[in-house]
Amino acid sequence: MDERSVPHEALRRQAKDWVVHLSTGRVTEADLRALERWRAESPLHAQAYAQACQLWGMLGSPLETAAYPADRAATIRIPIIDRRIGRRAFLGGALAASAAAAGVMVVRPPLELWPGLGELAADYRTGTGEQRKIELADRVSIELNTRTSLNVGKRTETADNIELIAGEAAVSAGQRPVVVHAAAGQVAASNAQFTVRSDGAEVRVACLAGMVEVDCRGRMATLRPREQISYAARDLGPIAAVAPEVVAAWRDGLLIFQDEPLAHVIEEVNRYRAGRIILMNATLGERRVSARFKLDRLDAVLIQFQEVFGAKATPLGGGFVVLT
Image 1 (cartoon, rainbow, N blue to C red):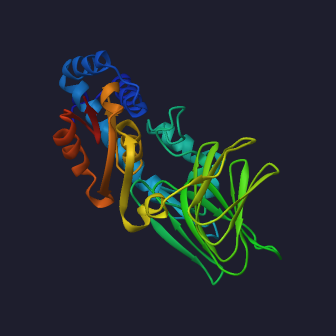
Image 2 (image 1 turned 60 degrees about the horizontal axis):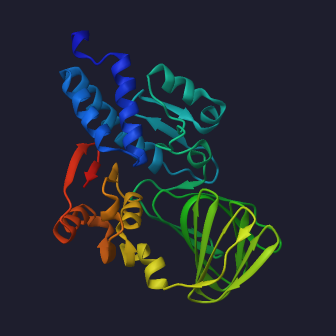
C-alpha cells in the first residue's frame, strides 16, 4: 500500500483525541462543526477518524469481554498487535509497552474511555452489553451486569468474600454469609438477595429479599426488602424505598424508567451500548421519561426519542450519536 494512503501518526493522534472528546459527552455545537471541518480536510483525515472509531469498538470488545478464570492463568488477545500476553506480563507493563509500539493506548486515559488496570485484571469481567452468571459451588450465585469487574476473595471461617471493583452485581446468598466489598464499604447478608452497584466512589445497595447489612467505615444500616441505600467515602445516605422490578430489571433484559429526566435515561442507556449518545439540548434533557426498553433492542431507543420528543439524531460513526 502506498504510504501516502495511510493516515500519518499525527492524524491518528488527532482522530483519537476527537473520539475521546466525544466519549465525555461534554461536546458543543462548535465542536461538532470543527470535527466536520477536520474530517473534510482530506480523505486521510476521514480515514483516520474511521480507524479511531473502529479501534474504540475493538478495544471495547476483546478487552472488556475477556473472561479470566480464578486461577489467573488466562491470556489477553490484542487483535491490533496480534499477540498473546499473559496477565502477569500485562500487570508488569509489557502490554502497555507493546501497545505503545503499535500506537495503541490500552491503559485507561483520564477520560475513562477504556477499562482500568484493576478492572482488566479482575477474576471475572463483563464487557459492554454483556451479562454473566457465576455459580460459586453451593455458596453463592452472582449475576454480573454490563461493564462489571469483580474478584472472588478467600473463604474465611465466617463468610465468603467478594470484591466488586466496578459495575453492578446481583447476589443470591444462602445460609452461609457472603460479604461484598465495594469502594469504602461492605455489604453482608445470608439467606438474602440484593444488588450492589459501584460507580467510582459511589455505591448503591438494594435489598430484594431477606435482610442486608451495609457498613461504610463503621457507619451501619440494615436494609429490608424494597429498600436501598447509597454511600461514598464516609458518607452513608438515608434508607429509601425502591422497586425491585425496576432496580433489577436488567436481569430480565430490560431497562425500566419511572419519571426520570431524559439526561439520566441517556446516561444509563450509554452503559449498555458501544459508543455514546451525546445530548446537546439541556432543555430536552430535563424532559421526564417513563419507559421500558429491551436491552437487545437499544437502537430503538433513538427512534423513540425522535418520535416522542421530536429530537434529531445525527450518527458520527463508531456508535457515537448526537441528539439535538
